[in-house]
Image (cartoon, rainbow, N blue to C red):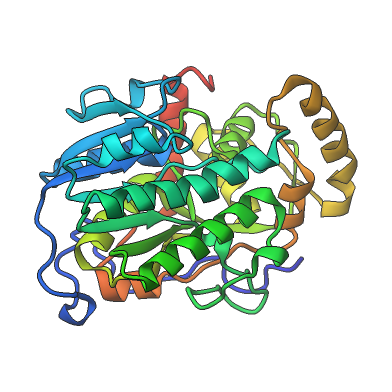
Length: 362
């Protein structure tokens, strides 16, 4: 796979101090929503906890919806009201949305591999329908649904935008298929009058990646010197806190039923690994492997995972995704919402610092 095209989408005029300012008036539908009580689902996770911080910082009273078994350390000191619930428990969702003016639905199962694909589909698709129904019944005024660029079709010619929809049958892997089906359900509800705006984050990295995410695992493994080789692919990197700010802008200025890519810069995997090595004072991996050469490793990793239940570091679906550059264009969000993002190298640095403080890297 060639990377003859530029690795980054530049956005001239992006302010270095990330002063989002006001979005263009034509992007709004009436007055921007004022701060009020907001329910954030998936609030203890990587993106969810960033959302809690963004919304509390903007003056919103946040109710954080978490599962009973979820660790809570990411919510420490945020001042959010923590409530327990589950996307597969409709009664808990109705209780959670009670008295809420807004909803940000960020909860999802984002594993690229699982021994129980039906359970992942149920959480991401039926769970999304359930919390949307609860919000509608509870009179929630405005909703932001966290989708993903996984619902968009990558292009070899140029970065994809919001128009590049992929069909569910063509989505690579159970995770992408689940997100396509979930967004289809949300868009249908929007057509029926549900006041929902759709946010499509690209690949967030940064602090509080507690699980960690698939990209966070790459950062950890690379930082630990356990990635001697890489495949020739690329992805759109964005600081998780910028994605969270993008959700706030989507709530305030997004059009109902519209989707907005919340991205950063398009980066070759080799450049990302080189930046990790540079910040740690180490040598980057030099061996580039074709995707096909890594397939036997994926087979062994998945076979082991069927016994352990742990997600493999490399899977068939991940490699199938890696055959294409996952490059995206977030011009629409920048133009219509006033969205901005910091340099991807800063996001890498913040991720490394957090992983080191958490004891995940030396």
